[in-house]
Image (spheres, rainbow, N blue to C red):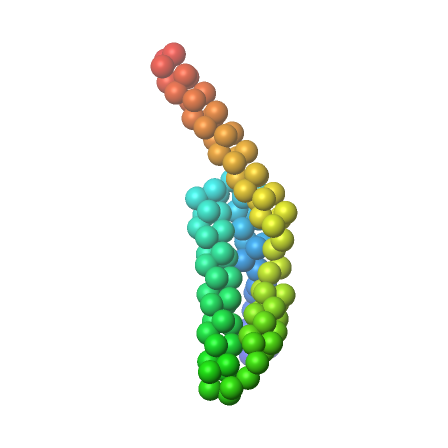
Amino acid sequence: MSETDTLEQEVETVTVSPVEELINQITDGELNKAEGSFQSILQDKMVDALEAQRIATAQAIFNDTDDDIEDDITDEVLEDETDITDEELDAVEQVMDEDEEILAELDDDEEEIDTEE
């Protein structure tokens, strides 16, 4: 097999954002994975906000600057990192709740079928 054949066989990998992954998991009914992804997204956002605050505090202490820098950095990080709005989070939680209700109904139906047999 030649080098060009090998290169042609390589497949590009598509990077899926964590939000897209969360939505795909919810759509596929993988609610346990979706919950983990949701918690991971929130944790990442908190870590980023804390890191921005740490940087701003260090700059204020060591560079003897105004509090305006702290606000600017925090706002920048929040604008860059908050791709998800509160409405979107509410919608995701609502879909997850609805999916859990459907799964609970299916479990109840399965139990009824098992008891009839």
